[in-house]
Image (cartoon, rainbow, N blue to C red; front, side, top):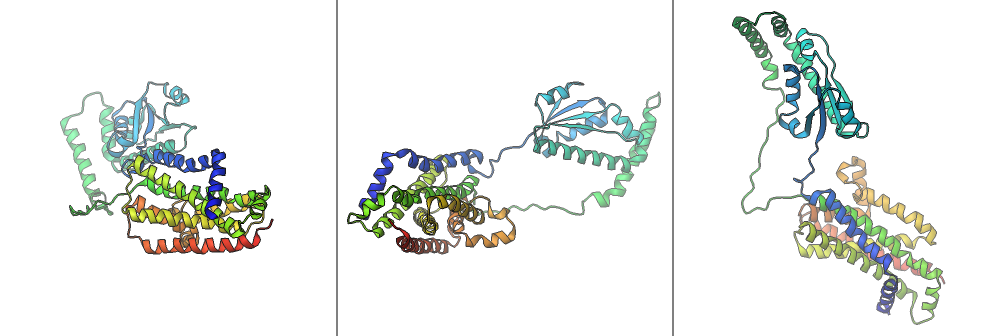
Amino acid sequence: MIWQLLIKDLQRRKARPVGIIVWLALPLVLAFLVGLVSSGGSSSDQPQITVPLLVEDHDDSFVSQFLLGAFGRGELGELFSLTPVDSGRGRARMDAGKASALLIIPLGLGDSLLAGKSSTLILVKNPAQSFLPKIAEETVSILAEAGDRASRLLDSPLQEINHLNNRDNAPQDIDVARIAVQINRIIRRAEPVLLPPLVQVTEQTIKIKENQPTPSFSLFAYLLSGVVIMTLMFMLDNLAKDIFVEREQKTLFRLLTTPVTRRQFIAAKLLFMWLMAFLSLLLVWLFAIIAFNITPPSWLLFALLVVVTTGALSALAGLLYSFIATRTQASGIVPAFVLVFAMLGGAMIPLETLPGFIRQLAPFSPLYWAVYPWQRMMAFGDQNFGVILFLGVLAAFTLAGNGLTFIIINKRVRL
């Protein structure tokens, strides 16, 4: 009789397929979007940030050229896209949204530095952006601070250079040599502090044996593990409302006039919820495996996780609904519980980014036990994360949750 009730629910959904198709397709759409955002999930394929920076150089001195050269070297050269513009054209291009910031180097910057006088760099930021202009602002501030410290350290030779620069005749070789000696002495005095730095970073490379697989991480699978679990809970929330719908539409009354019992009715509803969650979770991960080249470390573990995860989630949804009297109450209460469980369990926000006291509460969220094993298996390729414990907890919750749901709803269901 339970199978007949299950077939009846499937046929009823088949008569109105739009709703169930949407719920089955939603995790697939989210999986596709997550895959696009994470660029296929490889940790080495993260999108490169580039800051478009316009430059108006009114000074055209060796100081301004040295400053601009800093934007083209090393990591700054990879971070910034420098575009020189003619005088007065920078603001027009900024108004057109062509860059994140405009750096204006005033006339006389080099002379002011040599004379020990203050000078001002002008940075115009694009108000339509927030992150990239801030990078430009911080970088210019650091370079300006470095220039200020260097000018103070080399104050004496810079004054010599400024004096020679203001003379009508070309500097003599002896003058150039004297200045070079001064600069060399200053650098040598500062060498104990500057070279080497007091704090050093040492890089070490760990060699992996040839027969040992290289560890990998899939950002796509990590994000998808949480997204699909939370989506399944909202789908199960919608499916669990069928108990109230059938009672409101008097379908339950007509069924109970037949040999169908309330226990069989409830069992068929729980089985239907599990079947829909099972198909949805299976389709999502099969899509991810095919489309984004993700391979589980163990297909047996993959199959077991699909079964117990969907069993635990359907049990959780049924248990929440067993304490609710009306469909109106369910619409407000159940989504709130799902969001709290999702946040504590790492389905919405990675647990590593949450405060320590919240991470300690994570095991009290049923969704933690559903999200974490998928993250470890699919994102890290790990099958030694305490798999017996997680499978055991999910299986126990499936049995206990469905059992309690069955008992409570059987007592509460009235014609």
